[in-house]
Image 1 (cartoon, rainbow, N blue to C red):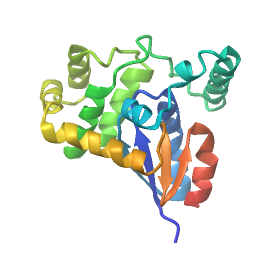
Image 2 (cartoon, one colour):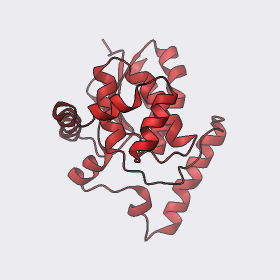
Image 3 (cartoon, rainbow, N blue to C red):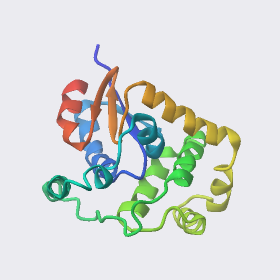
Length: 200
């Protein structure tokens, strides 16, 4: 029997992860699947696999980078994702907010946390590697910002993010967004149709 769980390997640093997540509610509804978000550190994945962000990877191939950006614009327009805007502070160091995702998962409100911080990163353009900005935003959005931020320094929280990242790399993950349906891996927003087929 095909698994009805969709796992997303996730880091807020990926604009494509944000774009994918906007498409997931309808996909999950159509397939009657449940979403499991696994917070990982994209920088750690890149370091372990030798992969690089497109803006670095294609720095010497401007036509390729331009095409990547064109595909992103097409996706945004096709799906009416008009609230998206590139974060003016990009690339943002996501270590603290990803540890925050581990805290939120531990406290049972990861989905709400991801929704909120995605909005901060890719709609409101906030500098989400500044602890004061993070704490204020979380407090304004239903979280205890200072307490959550303090918990990101707990050794167990730090270790869990590292363990998630290492486990993802061991499964073949090289970038984000990566999806798993059972043991099958799919990478990128352009694979959502394949993900839906696998779930169906």
